[in-house]
Length: 325
Image (cartoon, rainbow, N blue to C red; front, side):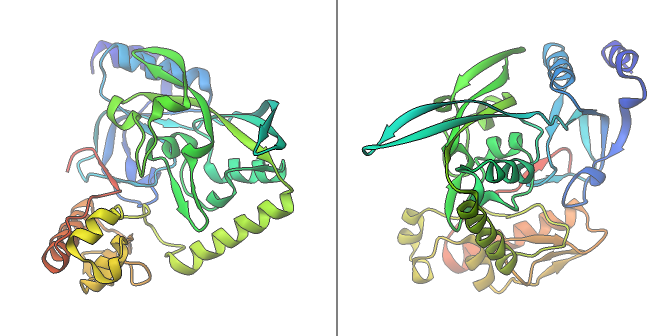
């Protein structure tokens, strides 16, 4: 044990855990142990331990809701910080004129450890539009910012309504505008920079909450009808392809759906060990119980190879591999 970790142990005591199994903390229920693990419950201690690790160059991984990731069977070297911050409040509003109509913009500030579902329900109950289509989205605000989480029915990206955020940049807290994140499909700039999101201010519009609940309930009903529920899964395995790619290789009906391609490559329901390509939606891999990261990787590579062979498309992973495999 080095002096840096001794300093953290002296500060946090038994809350700083050694060899914590990551399978306990991911929606996939897969993953070996983290060398060190700490659950930060306030913004102050989250910033403190992240800045401590960054300044001392301790390998650091920030864990949100545990979705969208596959942790290797050998675990994660260094320090894992579970972000369980939970602050959320309306910070103000301003008037605006859009296409000749006056409308109010309401600013909601949310700490990055807040579960997206909790935020969505809060905004709907307050009559604030912009996030309602994300009801049922797993994970936290920080994770949603990292991936620019999306929903397609109706279409909406978390980044669409971001106004500004506080990030940890070069060991200091800094406020940055929406443009800093360069949001795109499954993309934000922090995937490149490694910056850590502390809190986010969303700019939302007033709308009757009955209308918002109708949109939200239709969205979650569609999610339940088309995706596996009640299973151990991280979410979608592959990113959908672009329209340009679909046209260039002439996919069936010009589809951009990764799930469609995996399905029509004959892989729906295919199993390696206790990992299975979902028989409900082929872009989901589920843990039937006791699956390993190695099982999942074999399925991923099998699907990628077969889709490439059948359709000439190389699928890119949406799921993020973390740790040692």
